[in-house]
Length: 193
Image (cartoon, rainbow, N blue to C red; front, side, top):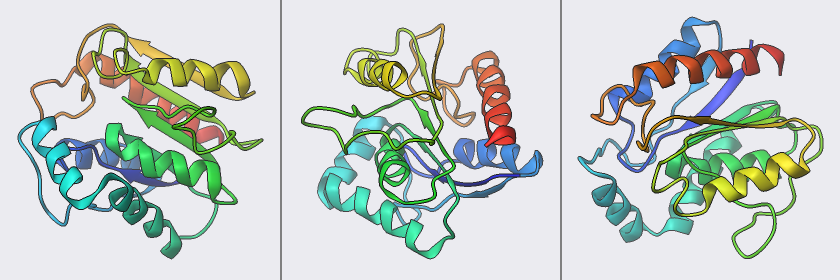
């Protein structure tokens, strides 16, 4: 059994994110799903990003990071898109991380946007669609490849398609087949960390 701290994407803690967490719980894992938006959800990514911009990207990321303060060490950190920011920061900086699951986004481990090097002994999976204009078009795939090239236990999984939130069953972008495969890979990861 693993204990997971999972952060939602820019549209908020949607029913689809809750359902994904529920699938992991059904497999015997403990999953924390904090709501960084205090109950708000948004119809589009742009609306969610506008809200994050009002609060401040750094402030919102730190809100997520501080949630970890009230939880034990030894967590797997997971995030969907915007939620990757606090998840990846915690995985890279909080002692005792057991792993990281990065969905639809990834930060580099070198250069201007980097949090720093990837910590030794922390496994990571990155998942995204191969034609997602955000994941591929904005460079997240390059950051994921950098991690895979430099980290011993790192995997990048690409799924055919062009949707960003493909694992959120409450949104039109949902892809059931890709999500089933992603879920099986995530469960195998959680069973071994």
